Length: 96
Picture (cartoon, rainbow, N blue to C red):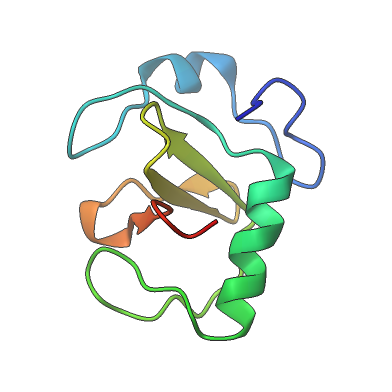
Protein backbone atom coordinates (compact mmCIF):
# COMPACT_ATOMS: atom_id res chain seq x y z
CA UNK A 1 0.00 0.00 0.00
CA UNK A 2 1.29 3.42 -0.88
CA UNK A 3 1.91 5.54 2.18
CA UNK A 4 3.78 8.46 0.59
CA UNK A 5 0.86 10.66 -0.46
CA UNK A 6 -1.66 9.45 2.07
CA UNK A 7 -2.25 12.50 4.21
CA UNK A 8 -5.02 13.93 2.05
CA UNK A 9 -7.98 14.10 4.40
CA UNK A 10 -5.96 13.17 7.46
CA UNK A 11 -3.44 15.25 9.34
CA UNK A 12 0.21 14.28 9.03
CA UNK A 13 1.83 13.22 12.26
CA UNK A 14 5.13 14.73 13.32
CA UNK A 15 7.98 12.83 11.61
CA UNK A 16 9.85 12.52 14.92
CA UNK A 17 6.78 10.95 16.51
CA UNK A 18 6.32 8.59 13.55
CA UNK A 19 9.95 7.47 13.92
CA UNK A 20 9.30 6.10 17.41
CA UNK A 21 5.79 4.69 16.99
CA UNK A 22 5.34 0.95 16.58
CA UNK A 23 2.69 -1.72 16.90
CA UNK A 24 2.12 -2.35 20.62
CA UNK A 25 1.67 -6.08 19.99
CA UNK A 26 4.44 -7.02 17.53
CA UNK A 27 6.69 -3.94 17.70
CA UNK A 28 6.58 -3.68 13.89
CA UNK A 29 6.90 -0.27 12.26
CA UNK A 30 3.65 1.58 11.50
CA UNK A 31 2.98 4.05 8.69
CA UNK A 32 0.08 6.32 7.84
CA UNK A 33 -2.86 4.54 6.26
CA UNK A 34 -3.56 5.50 2.66
CA UNK A 35 -6.73 7.44 1.88
CA UNK A 36 -8.34 4.66 -0.18
CA UNK A 37 -8.18 2.09 2.62
CA UNK A 38 -9.26 4.73 5.16
CA UNK A 39 -12.40 5.40 3.13
CA UNK A 40 -13.13 1.66 2.79
CA UNK A 41 -12.78 1.17 6.56
CA UNK A 42 -15.08 4.13 7.24
CA UNK A 43 -17.67 2.62 4.88
CA UNK A 44 -17.58 -0.62 6.89
CA UNK A 45 -17.86 1.37 10.14
CA UNK A 46 -20.95 3.16 8.79
CA UNK A 47 -22.65 -0.19 8.16
CA UNK A 48 -21.64 -1.65 11.54
CA UNK A 49 -19.49 -4.37 9.95
CA UNK A 50 -16.16 -3.55 11.55
CA UNK A 51 -14.89 -4.95 14.87
CA UNK A 52 -11.68 -4.21 16.71
CA UNK A 53 -9.35 -6.80 18.20
CA UNK A 54 -11.17 -6.47 21.52
CA UNK A 55 -14.35 -7.70 19.81
CA UNK A 56 -16.25 -4.40 20.00
CA UNK A 57 -18.04 -2.91 17.02
CA UNK A 58 -16.14 0.15 15.81
CA UNK A 59 -18.69 2.97 15.92
CA UNK A 60 -16.60 6.11 15.41
CA UNK A 61 -15.42 7.09 11.95
CA UNK A 62 -11.61 7.09 11.72
CA UNK A 63 -9.84 10.41 11.18
CA UNK A 64 -6.83 8.43 10.01
CA UNK A 65 -4.96 5.30 10.83
CA UNK A 66 -1.58 3.69 11.28
CA UNK A 67 -1.05 0.43 9.45
CA UNK A 68 1.41 -2.19 10.66
CA UNK A 69 4.32 -3.13 8.37
CA UNK A 70 2.77 -6.54 7.61
CA UNK A 71 -0.38 -4.73 6.36
CA UNK A 72 -2.65 -6.78 8.69
CA UNK A 73 -3.53 -4.43 11.56
CA UNK A 74 -4.65 -0.79 11.60
CA UNK A 75 -4.61 1.44 14.68
CA UNK A 76 -7.04 4.38 14.63
CA UNK A 77 -6.12 8.04 14.76
CA UNK A 78 -8.79 10.04 16.57
CA UNK A 79 -8.62 13.81 16.97
CA UNK A 80 -5.02 13.68 15.71
CA UNK A 81 -3.98 11.18 18.39
CA UNK A 82 -2.83 7.65 17.48
CA UNK A 83 -4.67 5.06 19.59
CA UNK A 84 -2.01 2.37 19.98
CA UNK A 85 -3.85 -0.05 22.23
CA UNK A 86 -3.86 -3.72 21.23
CA UNK A 87 -7.61 -4.09 21.74
CA UNK A 88 -8.31 -1.04 19.54
CA UNK A 89 -6.45 -2.54 16.58
CA UNK A 90 -8.56 -3.33 13.51
CA UNK A 91 -7.59 -6.34 11.45
CA UNK A 92 -7.77 -5.69 7.71
CA UNK A 93 -6.68 -9.19 6.74
CA UNK A 94 -9.23 -10.57 4.30
CA UNK A 95 -11.45 -7.47 4.41
CA UNK A 96 -10.70 -6.26 0.90
